[in-house]
Length: 259
Image (cartoon, rainbow, N blue to C red; front, side, top):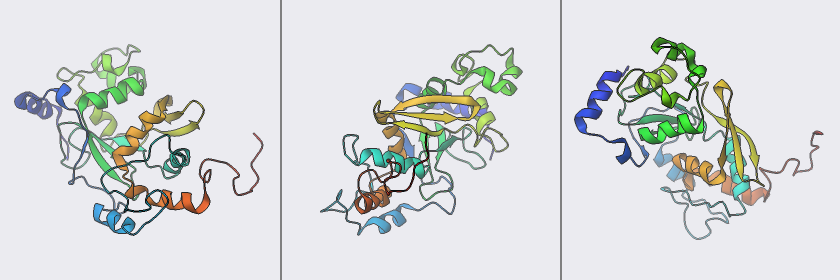
């Protein structure tokens, strides 16, 4: 279902919603996901009897993720997340792409087609920071959109978009996240390099975007999707194969190509 920018802006004005007050991402049960996604009940059932070296005396929590960056498991965990494409995500148009969803934030669709698939609603100010400041998107990357509103200037999209005067953020999100958009799957980011010395992860995305996250910043995205329960298979694999199983090439003795 299409959600019109004018209706969204009127709703914001009518309810007195202030961006600065939107402080937390929240899940919403009504979000549609594919048949591959596991429900919360399925996750709880799958991991209720799991016992590993990480949870020796109690079940894995189903409501939070507790692994810390200083844990010896953490580097392998990062590679496990990468291998499973857990934090890959795409942005939907305001109100949802081909469904009627919440319109008081930006909808992020995570891990599409996987058991971890979910949506979250991100406050507008957080999403704008993510898209404009972290990705560093320029208007030159989306000429087909910005040329409708005047010359392309070679500036960050944050300088071209506003909440109430065209081109608006709602219009732009529809352009990149609408059902017919060629950008819908293309511009989501994914890992490229994990640097354990600098504790940095390099990510790439469509339109030639390259940027870096610290381990701590990356962990904030992981917590959007995972709980300890939803990572139960990682903890099992770590106990089965030991440190380095996901992060060290050739750990099982197989040849590693010359670099």
